[in-house]
Length: 377
Image (cartoon, rainbow, N blue to C red; front, side):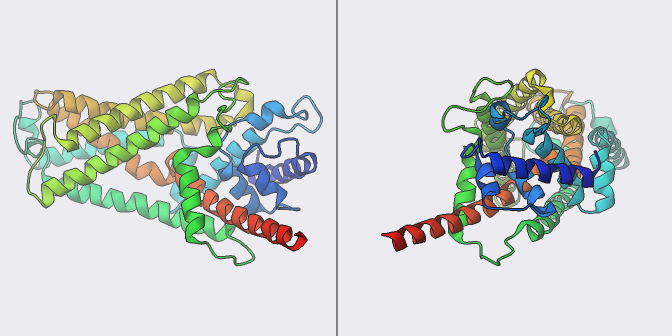
């Protein structure tokens, strides 16, 4: 379905849902639509990213197919999110290219490995690729420290820069038209909602995923992925501190905080992503958009590839296999960084901003309610 047709159908569905309100109180989406009488294109982008795909509304709705209304908010929002990832990506041409081509990560991975091998060859390190390297600085005997800093420094700026530009574009469109300011309380509330995955909780009962039975598995698996990634991020920052400030070169012993945090993060990602892929394979595909589902699966596999190759590198770092495993792992990280602004990796940026906007609306609505109650009293 074309973007304009999708938006028009989305507005139709939201108007019907707003008239029915059977799902009132299910999640943030249903409160947000109650605060509107009409829906703009920007409202649809906001609501799509506010949706956590818990699917409770779909299984409760009396107007899904085969009813003539044909309501299916989860599928609608998953389609819209996919359009948002491409619409707000920068550069736009890369967004369309990598967003529409599902093989983008694997192509970049292959190119990354070839480029890294070329760098190793040019620096005369090919002779040591299949040799056993032990002790401080052994990684840098394969590829130099300065080379890694330059490559991943540029890729890091590309990734974060792409996220920030997309975030600015998205926020410009969804921010309050009444110029209500965002407060520290709004940010704190949104952060709490994001870190706790409140809208996958179902008030303690969980969500209806992968089928119409309530379960908390998806929420816990998302926690494994999210906090696993954060542990790996902390491990990376700590490693940089040890290497560049304390001048203690990797690899570090197994009991070292850098290794322990990185290993726990990697295990968390592997458990979480594997579990989510299993749940997705069992899920009701009539409630999701096929293109969005493929995009999500690709990102999950990409993240799993990085985590698995990282754990294999940890296991083989004192063997002759370390060199080639290091190149494969670095290539997978480079591909993840390069495609990050255009893959589902970016969804946490838009989801968080949608939660900030919702927290603002919630605060304003509660303030108005409290004011009315005071006047009545």
